[in-house]
Length: 380
Ligand SMILES: Cc1cc2nc3c(=O)[nH]c(=O)nc-3n(C[C@H](O)[C@H](O)[C@H](O)COP(=O)(O)OP(=O)(O)OC[C@H]3O[C@@H](n4cnc5c(N)ncnc54)[C@H](O)[C@@H]3O)c2cc1C
Ligand code: SF4
Ligand code: SF4
Ligand code: SF4
Image (spheres, rainbow, N blue to C red):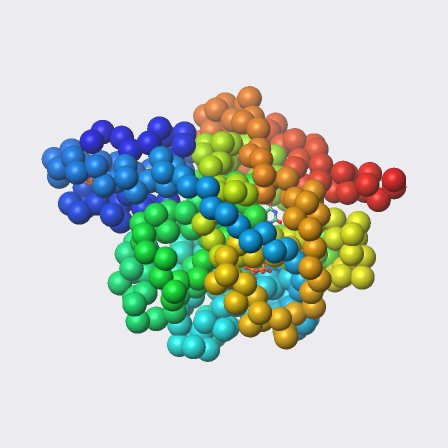
């Protein structure tokens, strides 16, 4: 076996690496900073399992219940503290942890590298809370899940392609496994984030100890990035002024598979999909909450049961799917491949993030476009 799927379609989900009976596949970082499978020909026995497991080559359309809600956690502190939207993830995670289960999501390590980790204690939940806008490394987490799923309840949270990868690898739809995916318009390069972190650390002459992409002290819908340093200095920038966020929201540095994503509505593998309810004021002004409002799409009966178990702790209303997709077009369609993406990655090695942001950020990024569209609807 030489390759599993074309490079520009591979999501880096690791299902192939985890399934390979000969450990012939390793995930290696390419020049854009994304991990891709590399096959060791000396170890490969051509069994074809990797191709049979790859969710991109075997995408199935999955019928969703499409039960939709606008909602937020009744606990205002929980919403404010790290959660990106209405802090629905925290409520579901607590249910699992209270049953001695395991919760798996994305967390920064001490070097600001993003990995999926497993926790079994509520005191560690803050590490997982909040969206981190770069691709998270899954490492061997799928194998860990397979080894533990028979004895423990497990909640896995990730991008739709990560959930698809896990389900393709694990095959059996274990009752014990609950999967949440996120509304996802794409993941930027970890190499870009690494470069940005280094430049900021050099500028402020101190190590970054916390990076909050969704600080709500300037509002949920006008959120900021807050960076905390070891020397206790803290900087807060509105997302529209933050150089890294400008590049992210311009879609210039996303993984190639994100421009032609296989895992939009209709091809969902998760039990529940979570996102921000952008445009909530157009439909449910009484549901606006300054600390965050979530959009919830229930895909399966398992997801529905989970939702029923958190109902007492949330304020919610049933809504229509199109009310969610109007503010979140990325649920249905992928972003356009930017003409200058190749040039951007060629320059990534020798230009600063400030210079790159100046040259390659769109003035009207996806976030601004959605906000403008919402404002237009409100004027009608
Ligand atoms: C890269 C990315 C892009 C997104 N794009 C959109 C969008 O376009 N529109 C929209 O409405 N919502 C988007 N979201 C989802 C949204 O930001 C919230 O994560 C979601 O609404 C859940 O919010 P919450 O308050 O319930 O939970 P939170 O407490 O915010 O929990 C977030 C969960 O996501 C997991 N997570 C965080 N970062 C990553 C990552 N990089 N990869 C995999 N898992 C991660 C965490 O482990 C945690 O379990 C995106 C999220 C990410 C990570
Ligand atoms: S063909 Fe089989 S042995 Fe070869 S890389 Fe794929 S899974 Fe591994
Ligand atoms: S299984 Fe996942 S990582 Fe492997 S080739 Fe397919 S998409 Fe890429
Ligand atoms: S846009 Fe699609 S391919 Fe890209 S990270 Fe999200 S789910 Fe994966």
